[in-house]
Image (cartoon, rainbow, N blue to C red; front, side, top):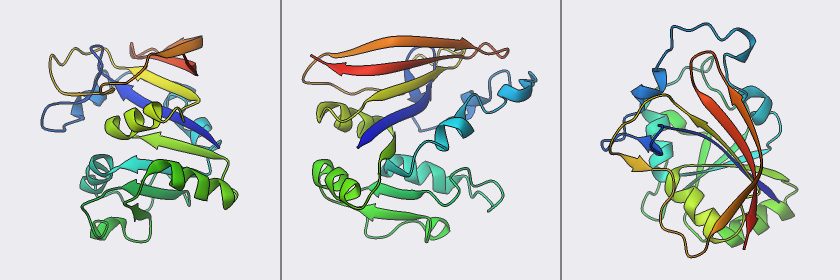
Length: 185
């Protein structure tokens, strides 16, 4: 099963402020990006058939209280990892399911069910998938802001991870997106 990351960071590598805020993603929001307004998200999401996110990512998603028209994932199967929660937030019921086990059996189960390409989201979840050598591709969009502190994209890894075949896109709002293939040493 292919596992890919599509995520945004600050210029100094944080995915959120210390309190979990992501308002900084609206930096330069007034710039008209035309056909690139979604910075490749819709094209990416069209390539995946399931999503695995961390508990914190799910809780942040729930806090947005998205309407059905705002929901960016369509009918995509979404699994949130949590060993402590027993149910998803009320506004995500029917859209997100919980899983409290290890990720290797989860990915094997998804693959056995016919899923081929998983979208992996959330810093700790991405780090866990990297440790398990499951991530094949990363698309990281860097916002033109330095936060100085916050929740880092990557946690501590047991081995180096080599990023190859970089393809970069600079957007009119000064965001820069780099797509990498992932290789494990």
